[in-house]
Image 1 (cartoon, rainbow, N blue to C red):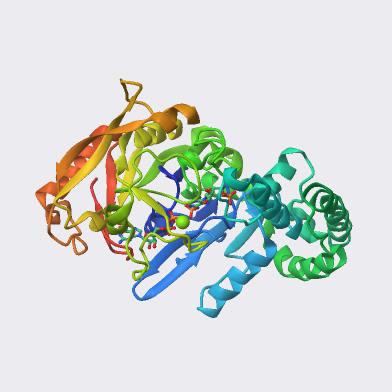
Image 2 (cartoon, protein in one colour):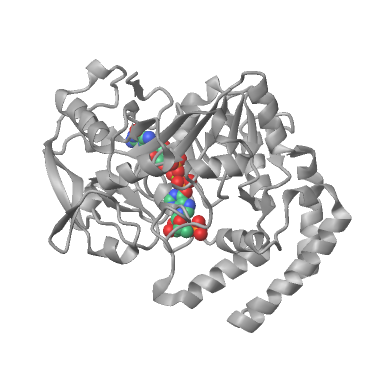
Length: 430
Ligand code: GDP
Ligand code: IMO
Ligand code: MG
């Protein structure tokens, strides 16, 4: 005991990698439970910046076992590239440290080609996916035609299944979308190499976690994406194809709710979104540029995975209340407070106005959401640089008031405030 779950409270990129790294030293296992390399999690340690896509952010802590769980989708080529890049920087990614659950699903070149073709076919209605093959892989999983990681332990079966899979998906690519067919034999040849390298990392993920919990160790579940990208609880259809919310941690890792102690929602001190779909507090022009940054700093709001400029806006409390509700958050971690330093006033969305009525809860119907006009309360800003703050008393009164306002408005206590990307740039509030 216990399982502690880290979830994104907004549309992703809240700083999940940063707080995962902060808490990893308390964990025996850090496990990714959903999504794939659509995620980009940044861990900054002194001058070193690690951008992780599939490998849990706990990998930077020696001694912590990292698991890629059943609920994830894994592109073996990307995983091996990420492993090689970490190994080149001296990080141990051997089979004792990095484990891949046999029930995870594999992303194939056909899934990536279908993601592209599907997005292109949607035209103006495109989701704005990361083009990593995420949607088609979860589609194949749901229609019971997916390839599971356990195949990597059986080269003959892998070759047969992959050959059949590419041939079948070529029909959709060529017949449905008018795209070029993929070369199945080339894929098989590459994948046999991947299998040889990844097979030693295969484990039964739920068993590994159960053993750790049975020994009384802490398991940290590292979410990817965010609550509003959840296929059930997000801004459907502008979502990802998995369950980034706390429930996804349970099914994705194979653990029941009785094991859960903390559900930690990570929220940025403002709001960002990559890809299409409604965004009530979105800003443009100079106000947006102020929050986004120019791209000069590693933490400026440009996608970790795709490099796309992120859409930005003020903090939205109906979103955080929605995240508290659908995840049963025990607490919030508020990141990037430092970015707000120097603003004279900071608007925070406290509710919406829809057709002349005040609405307190986040609407699940996209058409209603599109009509929502934010109702703002404006808080006083602070001039001081807070990046050096380490204790609550180090924060200017206006910054403390902002944090308290967020906690009260979201209905969850703030346990950590983050004031910079560095490992030590946290203020623990309880
Ligand atoms: P994730 O996907 O939720 O793990 O978040 P990303 O890594 O995609 O994006 C968060 C970005 O903000 C990264 O560049 C982090 O290093 C950076 N970051 C996290 N917390 C803070 C903070 O408190 N202040 C600043 N300035 N940057 C932060
Ligand atoms: P992390 O873990 C932000 C978005 C994409 C797109 C939608 C669907 O770094 O927070 P997909 O490729 O998943 O089918 O794209 O979801 N998206 C993310 N946005 N952070 C992420 O991950 C994301 N992963 C997917 O931009 O709008
Ligand atoms: Mg990210």
